[in-house]
Amino acid sequence: MRDDLTQSSDATLVVAIGRWRDDALAEAYRRHGGAVYGLARRVVRDEGIAEEVVQEVFLRLWTSPDRFDPERGSLRTWLLAQAHGRSIDRLRSDGARRQREERDAKRTATAGYDLEREAMDLSVADRVNEVMSSLPTAERQALELAYFEGYTYREVAVILDTPEGTIKSRIRAGLKRLRVDLIDSETGQPWHHT
Amino acid sequence: MASHLTHSEIQELLGVYAIDAVDPDEALLIDEHLRTCPRCRAEVTDHREAAALLSFSGTSAPADLWGRIAADLEASPPPLDLSRARALRRTRLPRLSLVAAAAAVSVIGLLGAQVVQQGNRIDELSAVFDQTGLDQAAAAAAVDPEARTVTLESDDGSRVVRAIVLPNGQGYLVQANLPRLGAEQTYQLWGVMGAQTVSLGVLGEARSIVPFVASGPLTALAITAERSGGVIASTNAPLVQGFLSA
Image (cartoon, one colour):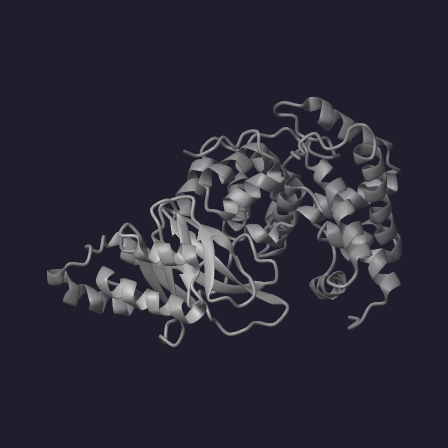
């Protein structure tokens, strides 16, 4: 009989996935699927493409679990990095960005960095929002354009009419500040299963 | 575009690299650097953890999305290419009998798995043990009437490893005299149990008898060459593989 994985650590889940246990993949999806989908949808702004990205990410975990190295961050961080990379690939290919921009032009109230609040645990989203608000505007803008809008730092430099070196520094500094305020503070990683 | 970046230039790019905001050629240069620089790897990990927090939205994935992923699992290529053994399993190969033996042997031969008939098996394995100094437990397994045996073979038949598996899952590889690997590599044994392919352990220094334990009913065994220490799931083709008949 299969053991219950709902209380297992993420690392244990990945080992079980390596042993072809689909219930372990299901548990990983239950824990992180929403975040992966939320990020993909935020970047590609298309529900269908976002769902394809989620499928790719979890199928990759299924076929190549050894690519996840627990010594290099949590499973959630790895899944989100995979999802972000694939979303950016989609965005940069086949004029997808232009389509997205056309859709965006029709919107009236989507600007800014407000995080979607569709479900539980709003306190974490609130805290992230709060820390983002506290970032210097220039750092926040550069981060948003690169991370959520999918622009390269060179493109961000053009958009903001700012030297490339400055953009690199702002994004690096912004990420460090987020880490200090969100991870090294009491907030920690609310989803991290150790 | 630069074909080389200094360490300092790479450090300046780590933030934008971590959030996929570099050009592809820069990404390649940084990838290469990260392979040998633990400090920069750690910084990228930190940046990605911070970025992951930005993703937190409490969003739920669509209710039917998992169903679609689950449906794709069966179609996904297995990390270990045991397709031939799996195909054999699906065909419900009849147990060898005198009547079926002739037909079955040709099928099994094509599939690289060879079931050894009980009478011959004991004699052959006893001979092996005599030559290797006799491992008592394996020898006992070899004469156990409940034991199953399998011959793991390479595609061209040049490599042969035999295994004995007892009903309780205890097994022994015999004649596991595969070529010596370099210090960076090890042989790893895999077992197919139902829909799962499970690591049964890495094989240590060359020994003629290697014990292993399977936690469920085995249908196939395979050996791959992996990096030292072994892997969770293999993407390498089996060097040898074989199917257990029943």
